[in-house]
Structure formats: C-alpha cells, structure tokens
Length: 198
Ligand code: GAR
Image 1 (tube, rainbow, N blue to C red):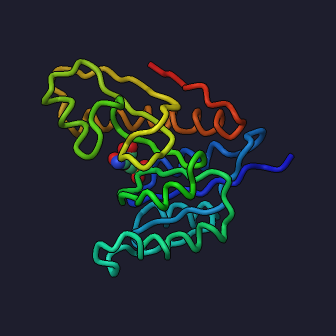
Image 2 (image 1 turned 30 degrees about the vertical axis):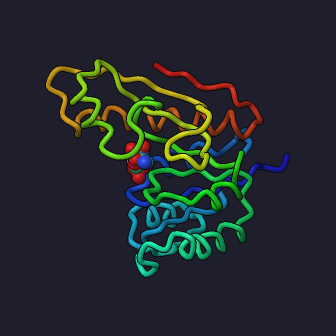
C-alpha cells in the first residue's frame, strides 16, 4: 500500500504536530513527509527533527507583510515534499486565496473554537466573555475565507466555573490532540464524514 504523504505547517510549540506524527504508524493510511514553519526558531521544528522528520523553515519577517512573496518561498519546500495532504497545526500566518486554491481539497486546519463561533484569535477569552457553557475545537478544510470551510470534526469541552483562558485552552488542547489525528486518519482514507467528539 502506498501511503498518503502529509506535510504539517506550524508556528509554535507543535503539540498538534506531535500528535499527528505519532498517529501515522502501523495501518494508518498516511505518513509525515515534511514539517515546516514560518518561524525558524519554532519549538515544533526541534521536536520534529528529534522525531527524525524532515523540516524546513521560511521566515515570514523579511517579507514585511508581502504575503504573496512569502508564499512563493513557502511553496518551494512544500512542492518538493509532494504532499497529498497539508495539515495546518497552529500555523499562525493568514494564507492568500492563491495559495489556498493551489491546495484546495487537500489542506486541513485545526481551530480552537466550535466554528462557526469565534473565527480568528483569542477564542478562549471570547468564549468566556460570552458566558458560553461549552467550547471546543474544530478541524476543517481550508478555503480562502479565514477559519471557514467544510467542517471535518469537532470536539466539545465544558466550561467550568473559575475557568481562565489558560485553563480552558489547556482543556481544549487535550481534545485537539485526539480530534486532529482522528480526522486525519479518516480523511486520508478518503472519508470526509465529520468526526464528532464530546
Ligand atoms: C492550538 O491550540 C491550535 O488550535 C491553535 O494554536 C495552537 C497551537 O498549539 N491554532 C490557531 O489558533 C489557528 N488560528 P501547538 O503548536 O501546540 O499545536
């Protein structure tokens, strides 16, 4: 059986990358082919290298906001790796419609809210401020609109009295590490039925 090739893009500590990469063993239909970051110093790159995974970095800062020019460079190692699926896992750069279109139907993202609620940043604080009783995370196909696109899975967590954005984020992150690998396994096998965890 030939495995699907998965590239993982991150900006930070890479705990979701570790969960995804760890899951791709045995009878899993995919294997990691590249871990890439827009931050050469991202902790996730070190973790990936220590796991024996291929890594690449394209620092976005020299491009001074020129997203298209940044993406030309980002695309090169990605194309070289020939991924069948690209997983955004804490990748904190907004991608242009052109880049997203190239990977349409092949790019996933995990977002720390129950989409369509709380697109963008500070999702945990916003859920608390709204007085929500539950929160969670979503894996979706990436389309040109930010944090939009067909939902492939969601996991719910309760909001507890006394929660802070930090305690809530930690509870959601535990579920992210379960949800994203579950969605990727299903997606890589050609099944787009949403994974719903509660
Ligand atoms: C995760 O909580 C992920 O959902 C979030 O960043 C964190 C990355 O953690 N992503 C976004 O906010 C995307 N807009 P990690 O580096 O430990 O996986």
